[in-house]
Image 1 (cartoon, one colour):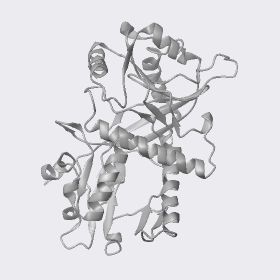
Image 2 (cartoon, one colour):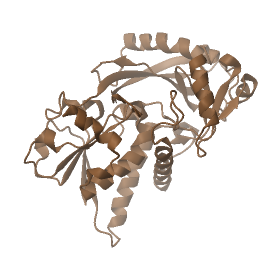
Image 3 (cartoon, one colour):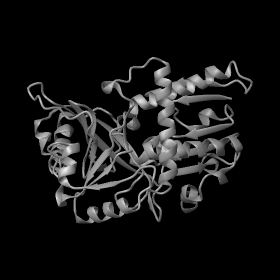
Image 4 (cartoon, rainbow, N blue to C red):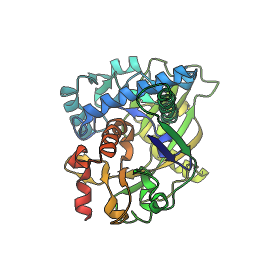
Length: 368
């Protein structure tokens, strides 16, 4: 088996590599996300794989260079409607990621100076904060290790190559592969074969990096969780955090660089939201901002679900090999990627689209 990855910006160079990395299986509008329990468990398995690969290679995993920060996530209720949904979640949670309902006094023991509207917050002690860039790079390292191990095993030779180049159209690859998986995120419909045929909405998001100035001695506690509300704080260390995220719908700007003006507008939008639950954010100093372009899927009866399936009929009637789409993960790629990646791999290897849940391929019927 030979796998070639074409990625012009390298592993983790796109929107996935700069996300906040807050991982849990719950929706703010429902009890569990669609197949949330399966996705959650599979994601935790891959996190362990990535950490093991990083450890094996001698990568430093101190607090300043973590792959997974296991401190939980705290969710203060932002409004009455949000409070009702979160309360329902807390009463019907998945056992592998429990939810505890706590009052403001208890919340302040976790995060000093936090403000809890309605005197009710929801703590998920098993939820985690992932550093997406380090995670993706460690996961690629794990894949390379599998390839190296195959050279001394009896299970067949494997090859893996990363090409830092773009593919302008799918016919460039015609006849070269048994299968091609398109996982370009928001750039998927820039391929001429798919242009205008995918029900994706684009949305640019800006994330701000903040640090605690040297003259502020009271640090963010090492044991304290990240915080998720109208905006979120992904804690990177006792004096470093990420704050996000903005939502600029219909944007086509995939440039990760953020102008001074765009950063200023993002801070004006995010700081009031964060101040509502963490007033101490006023003590933190903005250092830089990054941005990414999300590929948001359409809303269905099951929620906003990714788009998967064979797309040969988009490419042409007599194409050699099979073309597959893996896209529309939106802002939940960190939750969906492991379980759906596993299903996609099985479907591709067996040439059987039926292994993919019908909810994820239904978009093709509507498109036709």
